Image (cartoon, rainbow, N blue to C red):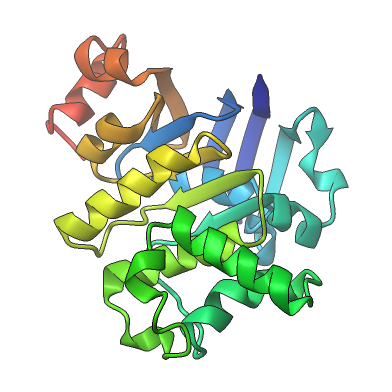
Length: 248
């Protein structure tokens, strides 16, 4: 089943064209890894999916992005971002307790019942592989957590809103290998219930967790295929060059 469909998408910021004639699909309950060098359009694509690009004055676009056959520009941004959550490269905990961080989005979307809120927070922290580490210190400041724990807390905060799609923008770029492994393990478990799009500069990470992988270059989609094929028998020599480290 197609969760997100992109049709002939072109994106500009001022005179700079960031995405060129992009046509692709994101399938339900997959992890789609998106790789490519800097300025290849990866993050622009990601931010397009929940209308974050619109926060920039110089942004304009042509083409279509559909969430389950519904144009995303017909969905209110706040509603869309509840359906399509995003985890950023740097963990951004709020100056609140661990519990209040995890509960923040759910509260903003109207969940007030204390019992339901506690259940939602516990479930989200479990899904983010953080519950066992913080269950006895929920009232402590989130800033007391390690970088890896803060990133998993941000994942939990996204999950508490109960989105359909989770966008990850280089979520492990500042993490140590152990924390990275925990985030990856969480992603692999989460795809059972969510659709995941992962932008990563770590091609090994893309190979480890991606069901399919898309290679972007210069704002264009060069190749999209099952991850094993992308990494063992890419069809385009530019894909092979990037994966093998010849450029990027």
